[in-house]
Each structure stands twice: as structure tokens, then as C-alpha cells.
Amino acid sequence: MGLDDRAEVEVAIIGSGPAGLTAAVYTARADLRPVVLEGEPSSTSDQPGGQLMLTTDVENYPGFPDGVMGPELMQRFRAQAVRFGAQIHTVKASRVDFSEQPYGIWTDDPAAAEPTLRASTVIVSTGAQSIMLGLDREIELVGHGLSTCATCDGFFFRDQHIAVVGGGDSAMEEATFLTRFASRVTVIHRRDALRASKIMQQRAFDNERIDFMWNSVVEEYLGESVLTGLRIRDTQTGEASVLDVTGCFIAIGHRPNTDLFTGHLAMKDNGYLITEPDSTRTAVEGVFACGDVQDDYYRQAVTAAGTGCMAAIEAERYLESRH
Ligand code: NAP
Image 1 (spheres, rainbow, N blue to C red):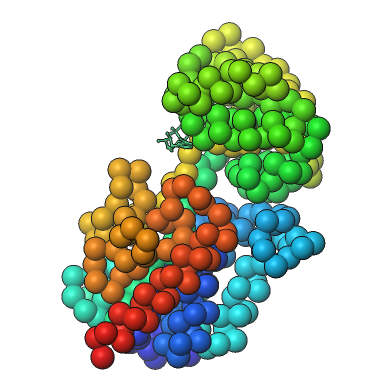
Image 2: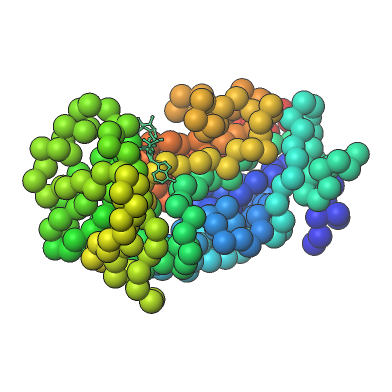
């Protein structure tokens, strides 16, 4: 069924990572016939399936004792949602209007007078993305030596020398965590002073497995199909060098995919959506937010799926209360 055939729905879900598709499974099984706008293919994590589409082995998602590939896991989420009747459309939302019920969602020309879809409830699950360095072959190498998540991938680098890029709390946290596995962790930072809080800095300085390359930027990822090293440039002297590492963790921050909601939903200073404590409710009645778009702390597939389930149950109860 095309989107044009369904001008008004009970539940619209924007985004199709673990949060959105879990919300789809639950609302479909509650017979609410959700419509999912899954996004459009792109080379970043802002695409159907979200960040797991850029991951190889996922070993920490419960229920898969032998691990599962990120894209396969998302294919399974999707198939499960479809099995219960979720309508999934490979389009991006281009504009929303939450000023009156049923809420409007545009998928094509945002200047069009009428929205593509109207929905009594909207579940926002557009996710977040890791900020990357923007170097050649970066996306190809994610999962092949390059990573943005120490919790997810640290285990694969036992007894190896790896690098962490960044100088904030995330970089210090990742570097410290990675010393559980790696024999040596080199933090590469573009300045000569860290941005991280003093306590996180001290923890990293005190860790004998961590060393620092100051005033240094990564210029090139080395290796064909897997990462074998980094070409580094000293920002003071201009000198180039090669750091032989088998892993590199990029920890220069995350960006939530919330541009669409500017002026419509309340956001924290860092752009993440604000939800009520222990809930996925936003300040707009009938609009719920789940997954990484509202989580700047846990950022795990399993926690995203958990909040997707919460959003579905809250949307269902909200609709019940209105009827
Ligand atoms: P952040 O504080 O924005 O730090 C980003 C770091 O990456 C900075 O050191 C920055 O360098 C560097 N960077 C940015 N763009 C770069 C580029 N293109 N190339 C090279 N380096 C680049 O981000 P974050 O560390 O993810 O932290 C985000 C927020 O979460 C912060 O408020 C932080 O305190 C909080 N957080 C807290 C904890 C904790 O308390 N346990 C853990 C993680 C995060 P410059 O310093 O030169 O700008």
C-alpha cells in the first residue's frame, strides 16, 4: 500500500533502527497498523536500520550467543515488524507539524500545503550518528578495524595496539575502557590540552597502558580491507608519521538526528530530544521519542529497543485514553 492511500493513521514511526522497529513490532501486534518512515539509503548511519548497518559483528545483543552481523540483525527486526503488519516506506520525513492533531508529516516537498501523512501519535526514533573525521574510506573501514563504540568492539582487540581519536570525556572513557583488552592505547589529540574533565584526564594519565600523541591529526587510514595503521600529521611541525595500530576508535562526539524537530520538540543544549523521566513522552501530547535520539548516555541497541517498546506501550495507552 502506498503512502498516498493512507492519509491518516493512528501511529507513525519516524526512523527504523532498533528503537523504531521495536516500536513497530509492538504497535503492529496491538493492531494499531503503524506506518514506519524508515529513511533512505545513504553512506552514514542516518539511513534505514541506523547505526547497526555500519557494524560488522554484534556480540552483545542478547539472544545471539554466536553474535550476529549488524545489518542481519536489523533485517530481522524489520521482518518481524512486517510480519505483524507494519507498513514500512523507504522515505525520509522532510517536515513535521505538531501544532494540531492529527499531526502532519511531509515526506517530499516540505513546502507542499498538505502533509503526506497525518497521525494521531508519532514515535520519533531518528537516532544519532557518531561524528567522523571525514577521511577517505572511513565508512568502508567501520567494522574492519575502525570503530565508534568501545563497549561494542573493544573485545575484538585483545592484546593489540590501538588508537583513540579525541580529547573529550568520551575519548578518555573509551581509552580507559579499552585498556581492559588492548596491550597499548594511544590517544591522538589535535591540541596539547584535553577537553575532558580533570578526573577523567587523571584516570587516563594514571593508566600505564595509555599514551598520548599531542598536536596530532589523523590524515589517512592505512590498509586495504582492514585497518593496519594511521598516517598522522603533527600540527606544530607539519611532520608526518605512521602509527602501526590494528584498531582505531573515533571518539570526537555524537550528533542526534534532530534537525527535523527544531522548533517542534524541546531539545537539550546538545540537540538530544527531551523526554519525561522514565518515559518516552515529549512535551507534545501524543508524540514520543525513543532510542538514541533521546539517549546521550547508554547509546546501545538493546537500550534503544527497550525504549522503543516503552514508546509503543505509551502510544497505545494514549490512544486508548482518547477513544
Ligand atoms: P566533546 O566534549 O565535544 O569532545 C570532543 C573532542 O573531540 C574534543 O577534544 C575535540 O577537540 C575533538 N574533536 C572534535 N572534532 C574533531 C576533529 N574533527 N578531529 C579531531 N578531533 C576532534 O565530545 P565527547 O567527549 O563525546 O563528550 C560530549 C559530552 O558528553 C560532554 O559534555 C562530556 O562531558 C559528556 N560525557 C561525559 C562522560 C562521563 O562523564 N562519563 C563520558 C562521555 C561524555 P578540541 O578539544 O580541540 O575541541
